[in-house]
Amino acid sequence: MEEKIVAMPRIGDKAPEFTAVTTQGPINFPKDYSGKWVILFSHPADFTPVCTSEFMTFATMEKQFEEANCKLVGLSVDGLFSHIAWLRTIKEKIEYKGMKDVEVKFPLIEDITMEVAHKYGMMQPGESATKAVRAVFFIDPKGIVRAIIYYPLSLGRNFDELYRALIAMQTADAFNVAMPADWRPGDPVIVPPAGSCGVAKERMDGKDKEVTCHDWFFCTKKIDKETVLKAVLKK
Ligand code: BEZ
Image 1: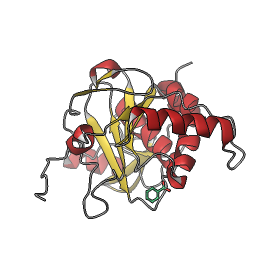
Image 2: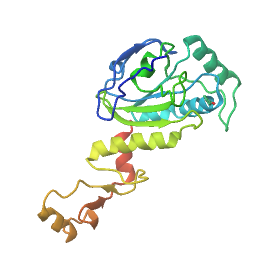
Image 3: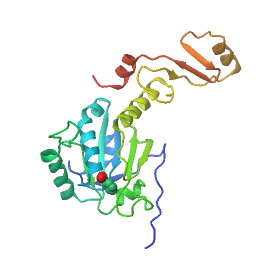
Image 4: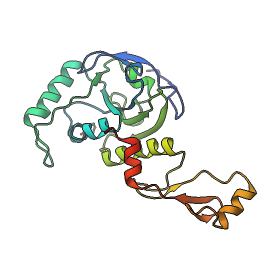
């Protein structure tokens, strides 16, 4: 069989458009989500254990993402009735790590034709020709792809990291800063690089009391946790 070659969206691209049937009714993507962040994520198959653990975790954290102005949208190449049956099973029967009676309220796209999965590069034939890998697309309120993370079939995602990445990107936008390794709200952030020899010298001379420089090109400042959360979370 001829392999379908598709261009995957990249960071900075407009999120590819599609309409789809979901467990919460039809959606027009990304138009329906204008003004909000969205995490569009794929999973390999319904009624599988890793995916079940992921859906329970994501559903449990949905309110937390909502408070950060972020909607969740799932996808697999299963059909709508399979999705409905699986989500009902999760709610009615599955207890896992203290989570039970978990209702998945965010939309889960049916993509039997794999049209959306191909558009987003979620089908990776080296891993599986018939199942989507665990892809995560962060799409900003203007419909631009801001981050992409991929995991293989055998590895469940770290949802704390997905939340951390979301808050970090929102904070970077709000304060025009960059985030160092392992940044969490309250940790120092990186200020834009010195744009002239004069500014570089001033920074190294310690003229800006708000800024701490490890060298002229690597300067940080403090933004306290409360200020970060006030800027990114809905009240
Ligand atoms: C799972 O979710 O458990 C799974 C799905 C596809 C392949 C391997 C594991």
